[in-house]
Length: 127
Image 1: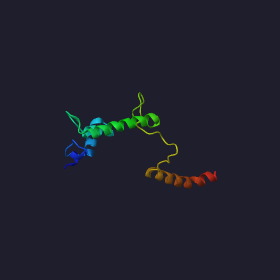
Image 2: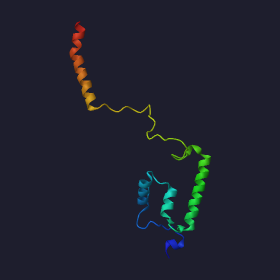
Image 3: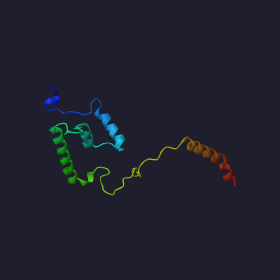
Image 4: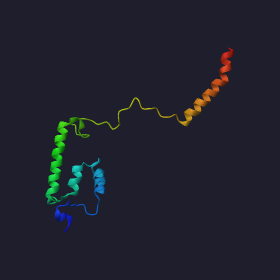
């Protein structure tokens, strides 16, 4: 007896892996697909809907739990779900972030400046 006959999950993606489906959806959507979108893509048939009732029920239960969780924790809202909010592509700058090390040119200039100052220091002292 096959696993699908025992109530196991039935994929409709054929030989294409779920990871490959996720990559293709990300390219098509311009963002990473949500888990629910990926399940709908891989577990539905074009004319019949979901492949089995278990998958349909699991997805409905997941969505209900997600809505309940987000209503109790509004600070954990997903990116881009706020109406009219514009997400910045760049993260906010950290004021405590250490500076980048100087480039080779700046190290050379610093050493050259020290040599020049040392060589001309006696001129300042003799005046």
